[in-house]
Length: 259
Image 1 (cartoon, rainbow, N blue to C red):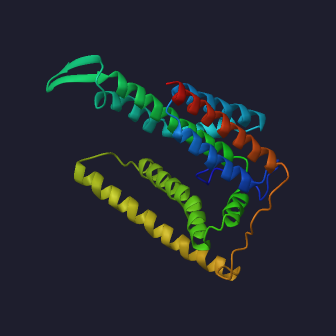
Image 2 (tube, helix red, strand yellow):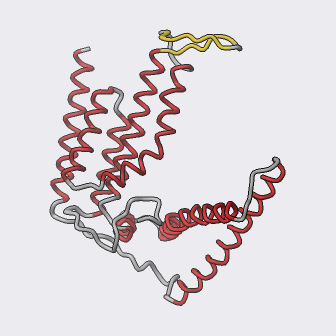
Image 3 (cartoon, rainbow, N blue to C red):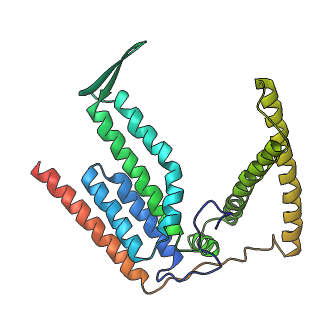
């Protein structure tokens, strides 16, 4: 969906074999397992399982990876910055005008671990959400007893933040077509102020129209989206997560005992 921040399926329902609630809860559980891992090989193995099962479930990887790639700046920030602030084993020393810039092996390893954690978590949740529609996602949150006012705020955020960004891009393109050129700093600030003010003014007009139309449709008299019932296949998904958890924790317990 081009007007949403997340890769939801089109329409009100999807053809997933599992219920949206089980998919959402399982992704949270799997995310906890990813976050708890301190060994890089096990972490890579879990990410590989996510990619494997996502491929078997026909995940739209092109959409998911394109969205996940936007967070690569955060991942590279941790990988490139941590080696210079954490550790004791020197692997690189660079002379700079204000002194020596030293990189440490422990910081590099920790940065790579954090980077793969972030990549795994982002890919996991985007892949999970790509298997449900927006209505099913809200229905799953309703099943988990999330308050209605939070769901309403979430719907507005998912819908209108992308519209706000698109509006800003259109106005910037309109300024360029009218011959706008970057000038002094004060001129840039003034132009940016006019741009933001116009966007906020249009957003207020649009919000009033949306509120009036939603009121006419009965908004405020209860949430029309209801909870999602579980499916039989959810049992297999839960059992698979339990077996995976037991395998991981048993392996870590054995390593602690042998050490």
